[in-house]
Amino acid sequence: MRVVRISTVVIAAVLPVLAAASADPADVQRQPAPQAQSEAVDAPQTESGSGEPGSDKKPRPVLDRRDRIFYPGDTERPKPLLRKLFLNIVFDQEEIFTSPFHANRHNALEWLVPTAATGALIAADTHIANAFENSRGQVRWGGRISNIGASYTLIPIVAGSYVYGAWRDNPKGREIGVLGTESLLDTLIVAGVLKEVFRRNRPDEKNPGDFWGGGTSFPSGHAIQIWSIASLLDHEYKHKKIFGITAYSLAGIVSAARIAAQKHFASDVVTGGTMGWFIGRYVYDTHMSHLAHKHSSLLPMIVPEVDPVQRSYGFTLVFRPSDGR
Image (tube, rainbow, N blue to C red; front, top):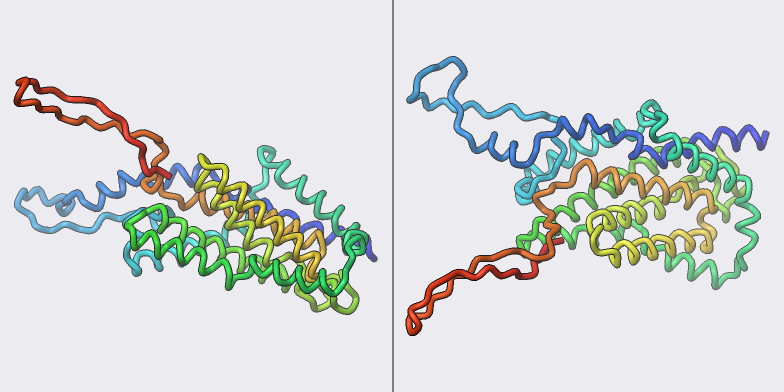
């Protein structure tokens, strides 16, 4: 009976690669480029077949309803932002939960490795949990540290990024706030659904580790949330490794703390963390705006030079550091 349960639960490992499996390159190609959308909105159009040069009718351009990129202008106004955020989350959930049907030979390893790791960890969960001291002090401090990965901690962080971006007119700051919000909402929905499906008992509950026992242990909500934000920050600041190293280190500490606090088993946090990483990458790849990213480290500038005394005139090409992200 135990083997049957383990084999069934291993299926949950397919969701850690939901983002990678559902990211169809063809869908990305179908998205209109930022410049193309801007030109389509700004370009005046006359009614089709009119032929009258003085016609004042300018029908609104029909854009792809699956245009999922948050352009800088979208993040400035609440109405288009909330509408696109809602639609994107709906599309995300559709692709997340249909991702098993998108598996192919190109992403086979991204499915097989997490699946095998989840199955092995489920079998070893009790031994790993008993390897800890499991004292009162450990449980107390583990709970305090793991609160870093809670929603009430992460939401103010992403909200602060958006507020800073709006205050300083920084499109990247607004983008991180918006994509961070979308990542958190995606992970909350996925974790909530899976918790209800597997209902695994926590280590500090009766019959610890049993699936379909009424608990909410599998997967770890703290792990999936903080790893999604860590993945997003790592991809946003791919040219500044310190951001990724710091974010992943903090995510690892929170994940270990959930085990130390006897709130989750090792398989819970590893599965949740893996899913969170893929969701963060998926949200970045699918919704990131290139208009908010400046990858050059130096910006060229032409500076005019005028010297009336020497009666000399000219131009100088100089480079200054950019504020690129």
